[in-house]
Image (cartoon, rainbow, N blue to C red; front, side):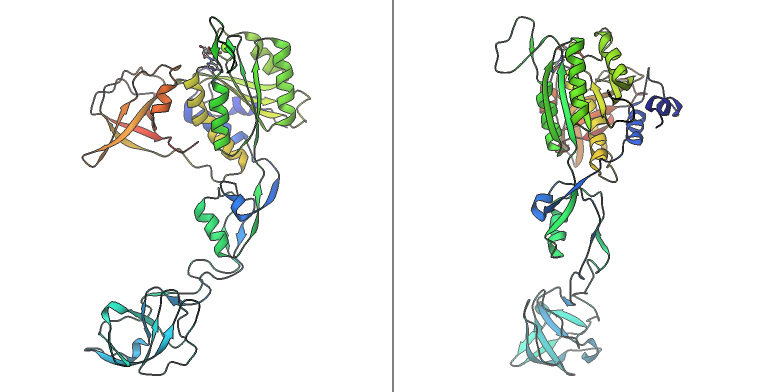
Amino acid sequence: MTSILQTLSCADNYDPESLHVDRARELILDLLSPVAGHEQVFVRQALDRVLAGDVISPIDVPSHDNSAMDGWALRCGDLAATGETRLKNIGTAFAGRAFDGAMNAGEAVRIMTGAVLPPEADCVVVQEVARVEGDAVIIPPGQRSGQNLRRAGEDLQAGRAAITAGKKLRPAEIGIIASLGVAELAVRRRVRVALFSTGDELCSIGTPLAPGAVYDSNRYTLWGMLTRLGCDVIDMGVIRDEPAALEAAFREAAACADAIITSGGVSVGEADFIKQLMTRLGEVAFWKIAMKPGRPMAFGRIQPDGADRPGAWLFGLPGNPVAVMVTFYQFVRPAILKLAGVDPVPPFPDFPARCVEAMKKGRGRTEFQRGILFRENAEWCVRPTGAQGSGVLRSMSEADCFIVLEAGRDNVSAGDTVRVQLMNGLV
Ligand code: AMP
Ligand code: MG
């Protein structure tokens, strides 16, 4: 097996001392592949799961030519080129109850939306333009063959893939699967993620706060984001900055999870033994990503029992609560989607917006400010959410987007166009 570090060091633009955000994301996605294993579930349980194999349509949808409107089924060839045509009304076709007679020249069938088209008819004229006179219907000129029809197989054809493997199943796909009459399907198994926080200053919720301590919030935001992404989360609690405890935690996590997420312990000046430990238990690259917040990050694999044992991917996130969330959105989210088998992994939705406040910005790294979008004069505008410190979690709570200030950019003046990434609903 090729070493991860070897692969990374051979990659173009690989500088672990100053890695561009997009490059880091690409490197991670290139190394990961979907976890193996799937399970059979009923259609409702498949919501938000990832389809394991193509769903092949057993039928044409619709299964018969039918009317798209309430109106009159007829043969266009019976109509006069100019002026009205009088046709004989010979019966009605309802949705689910076809007209069972034959339709001869000069005749029309009253037809409802979704009803089977009589085989002799080739168009439907909407009821609003026709006029009923006794047992006849008067049709104006200007009708076209094929109008107001839904052809058999127009949506989906029997034998073809209706939905392809790798699709994350949303309500639209759940409906399509039901429209085929399929009751059960195979979805990929959930990604198992173990997480723990590191730091001697961390205090668990529900206990009194000791002087100088902070409550451990990262484990809760991470749990929330991972749960939203459909992962099985294994919460391992707070681990002290102490080698034996950390080693035991890494070993336990690697034995049961596909990925391990830690927070804290990767910044410069933090106990170097964490780095030594991670490196001893696997192959880990320490990245200084050219971004703010979230500069230090570790990525690699923890394989305490040797490189030929499965082990788990490691994402060693910084400790600051906002940095945790920003690095999660930028790197962990796409990685989890890749592991989950989502194909293709969708890019972050982004678009330009007018920034209504000035912002300070240093050159050389990408900054992710937290912003609030609003509409003004038919234009998307954005304003930052007040204090932007990497410990101010409220800035994430108030935000619905990231304002992305590219590495090469400096200060932003009020009225400048900026790029925003929509984060609402993504995790
Ligand atoms: P570190 O990256 O470990 O140096 O932590 C940076 C900052 O984030 C420090 O102020 C920590 O107290 C804070 N921090 C680290 N871990 C957590 C956590 N799990 N919950 C809340 N704050 C944290
Ligand atoms: Mg720490």
